[in-house]
Length: 115
Length: 113
Image 1 (tube, rainbow over the protein chains, first blue to last red):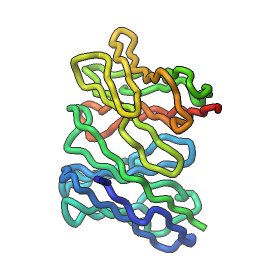
Image 2: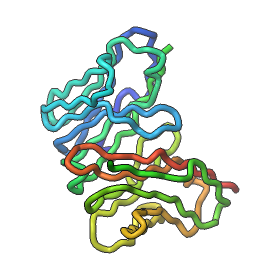
Image 3: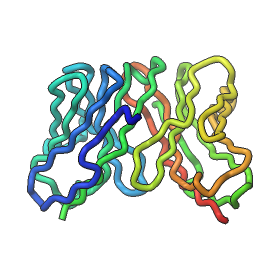
Image 4: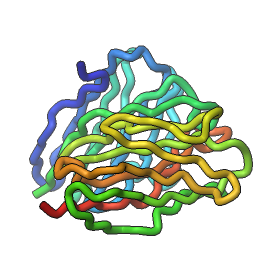
């Protein structure tokens, strides 16, 4: 059974039209992540939550926001998508820090195309 | 600085042949190492992980990896590749003191029938 569930799997949006991607988890993990992955590249971390504590990567554009209303759900909001935001967006979870032996688990991804 | 290097961007093997994907890491302490596989249009699936103990780690789908501290390597192997193994493979390390995981740039595997 899927443990990290992303919706929608595929989304096409117009340039500048806000879009929200959702993620839910059944693992009860403390940490939830959002990654951006462009074609043939490694995933790039946008931000993560430890419980309700939000941590933004320094190079994440202000256009990207996130919400985590409870342990199970996390949302990625792109306020004004540009063509360069076309990518796969991956949600992931872990119990704690990777450097202390916690495994990160990924969802199936949400393909976003900006036209 | 902590880093992960996957020297091979593309690898092509024939079905039934053996496979080895290379991964080198730069890490000061005991590394926590992972291999993930990503099929087209899908998320990353955990193949195996190394935290401590036996340096030869068994994973899913018939994959194994060997941790070699002296070579700073964590290479992924499979004795006999199946066409369904065609995918992108990512090596990663859990970054010390942070919630980050450092990924290599990936190796794309093509399997010839």
